[in-house]
Structures are given as C-alpha cells and as structure tokens.
Amino acid sequence: MKAIMQRVSTASVSINEKIYSQIGQGLLVLLGITQDDTQEDVDWLCKKIIGLRIFSDHDGKMNLSVKDIKGEILLVSQFTLYASTKKGNRPSFTEAAPPTLAIPLYQACISRLQNELGKNIKTGQFGADMQVSLVNDGPVTIVIDTKDKK
Image 1 (cartoon, rainbow, N blue to C red):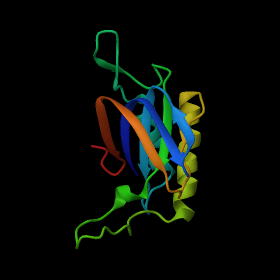
Image 2: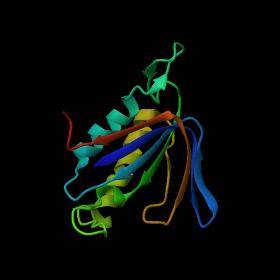
Image 3: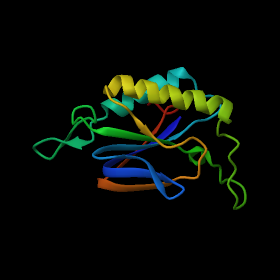
Image 4: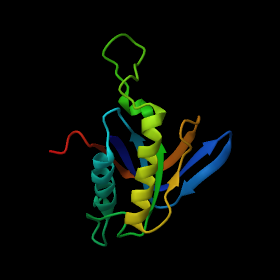
C-alpha cells in the first residue's frame, strides 16, 4: 500500500459537483492498493497514519499526531499511485489491485482508522470520478509505502 498524507486545515471530496465529504483540521490520505497487499499492510499503515507526529505543539514543533489534536481523516482511494511510467508516455496501472481485492482492503482501512481514531473517517467513493480540494497546512506532505518499512 502507498499513502500520500497531507496535513490539512480543510479538505473535501466532490462528486458530480456536490460535496460528498469534508473535514476540518486533520489528514487527507490518498491510498493506493497493490495486488500483493494484505491485512498486515492495513494494520501497519493505519497505525502509522494515526501515530505520525506531524502536527505542531505549542512550541511550533511537529510533536502531535492527528489523534492528539482530535483531528479528522479524509481517506480517498487512488489507484493511480501505482502508475508505472517506465515505457512510453501512457501510464500503466497493472500493479494496482483490482476492485475485488482493493475494496475489502480499503474498507478494512476505514474500519481500522475509525477504531484507532475513535471517530468516523470521511471517505471518497471508491471508483468514482472525484474532485479533491484541500488547504495543505505547512505544506506538510508525507509518502508512506508499506513495502518500504526501513
């Protein structure tokens, strides 16, 4: 799994020009799922998302997690994170998991994050054409790949 986490002051997902979901301060997480991802990847990634200390404390240092600040999470599936651009100019998405594998893992991420954060997780709509808007706070953007845990 790959996740692009952005610290935001606000973020939203619109579908068909209507706001589908939105959050205030917290994390926008774009999530890519590949063919060999498992529940172990879900568990590791969700623990990392909840615990990553990228919010400022009263001294302005990144010492607080999304849970510490009582922030929100907007989780959006994004298969294009597994685009291969090695050949030609048209990306290949063969590494992205098919929906039959990706949807259950995406739903497992939602459940795990809700349990860890203690509140509902806002989402996009799997497979929909979405417009994502955000105000990146900092800017702070972190990329996490469960296949690179070093």
